Image (tube, rainbow, N blue to C red; front, side, top):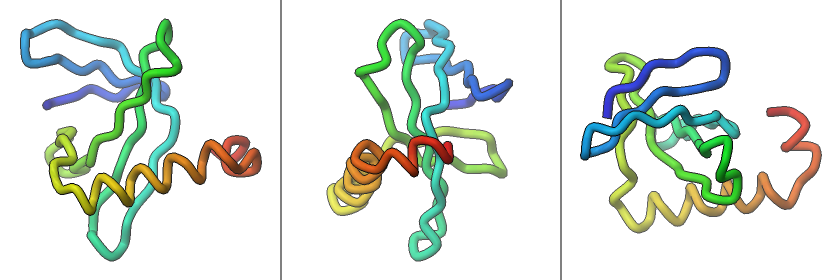
Length: 90
C-alpha cells in the first residue's frame, strides 16, 4: 500500500481506491526483526487504530500477517496505552 507522508499524516489508498488521511499515533522499530512499524488512525475515528509494518526504502505499508509478529505489535500498543510517559514522547 503506497503512502505519502506529510506533517504526521499519511495519505493511504485502500484496496477499493478510496483515499484516507490517517494521523500517525506513533512509530517504533524492532531491531530483532529489522522492521519499522506505524500506528495510524483517522481523525474522526481515534478509537480505531491500525498497525502496519513500514518499508522506509519503498515507502510502503504492509499488513501484519504473521500471528507472532502481530502479538508483539499488540503488546507494544498496549504498553503505549498504559504508560502516559510514552504517550507524551510521541
